[in-house]
Length: 267
Image (cartoon, rainbow, N blue to C red; front, side, top):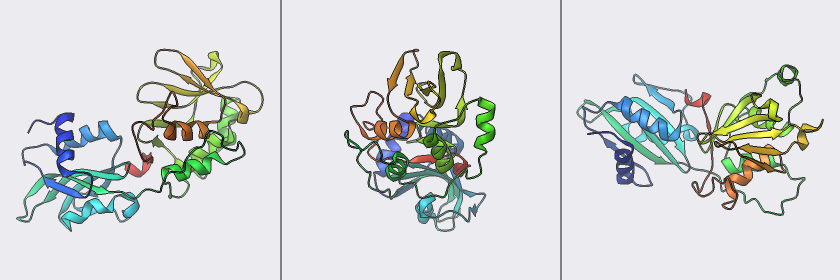
């Protein structure tokens, strides 16, 4: 079997949107399939390694992927993708032979909370972002030393951004929008500080005007060097591109449900 992204599309279509799994030909290198899925979904989480299941694996981290194999899974790596878990690796079949596998399972996500165009500006956009992504894990970086970071960058930082980093940790919204763990300053000469970016090489920044960082506007520096400005904070900007199909940088056209892929949890 020649593995390409088109082949992966066909295999996933065969499994369908619900729960399903298949054993693949023994001459297929499972690492190739892992790499193809990683290129599509980002960094995976290891559920089983050399026959040992991570004891922290539960429904919120893809345990449903292991159900078809009972105790026969050898290595399984998993991705969260919208309302679906996707996994690959190897497992022993009923005859005891180890084979590559591909498995999918339903993933429960909270119903999105709509973002109205006339949203009250006093609403807590971080709480809305947590609801939108179905985030239920504890804070990922509760002990980050923001005083040290801000001293090194010679500026205070927006409070909603700091809450995003503390809440979600290192990773990407919808496996696409990478959240920087501390801002990048390479566009400082343009008055911009970068807080996130995408695989399309768009950079999400603040224009650092004024002494109150909570009033800094978001500026998108596109891959071709153009700037687009938005009069809102980072958390509101992320909420809107996740849900508004008419936003110029929308992700709502591609995903019906939204999530945050935490890279540390995927190691």
